[in-house]
Length: 401
Image (cartoon, rainbow, N blue to C red; front, side, top):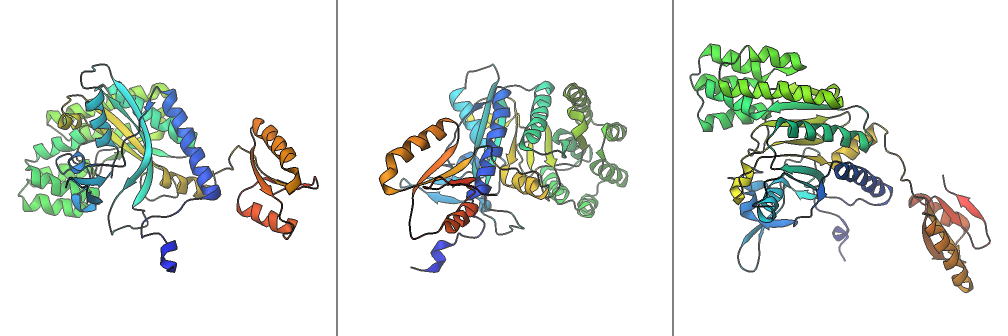
């Protein structure tokens, strides 16, 4: 058999042993916070019809999707993003519901890109969606929940950066940009290429004074004071209303003390075009990209036949684990792992002892003693497989450091 078969394709990897145990523990801690806020778990298919993630929906480009066909000839894709799936579920199961519903989810997403830049093609995401609530209070709930989730994961230092897509769209309208030009500008802003933004606006004969306003505004970021400065620069109602909502949001965040973790970035845009209001991303040390991202998407459910506002966010669990590791915040799991070695004629006694330990909450692997192996070999194996202690047939107990 070829040695190549034991390797994974580019962009995916195996996770096992202590690393996987720690990842599972972090996910469990996050899910507990979701549940404490009233979010109900839901599981959606790993693959869906192509139209759920089509260009019109505003998710990843078609050439970044893993596409394949079923036997009926339907085009299917591995999910690149959970939000459209959540919107589809809400439309399917809660079409006539007018009271807001709360979903939480966890699973893997897939992105077929050759431009990895250290990222994986398959990553674990967990997140929440609040469907049917268009209020600023809902926005505050999600950002406060994001704060509590990151704390529960073990992070101590992080920043949640908040933007507003309606503010960006408003200054595009004020500049007289057509939709296609707006998308070009959006792409340059996403890449932090403000020289590219200036070039596009100049080529489309936008007035110099408007270009200056545009550049000054999209580079505006920081505290609540940055919003006040931006307020003096814009004249269109759409941007002004977006700022009013951000001011109201800030006051609500203060109730939970979440404002200490938040800053504002009016130049923030998203690669997902379905966002309609606030967008936010969380950053921390040790990771070059956001570990959490979300926002409001009030028009998305209409593609599935339900007119309802919505807001949500997702955590990139793999990136969060990298951050926790680099900041030395990962701890061993709470359970005690024991390997109980026994002689062949002592199975019944070993089983009774193992069940007693299991009832005490310990994780016990019963292993038949191989007389051809030394105790040192078992200790070596235990260290490699995050076993906390060994219980030998002769009664000796060895704690593995």
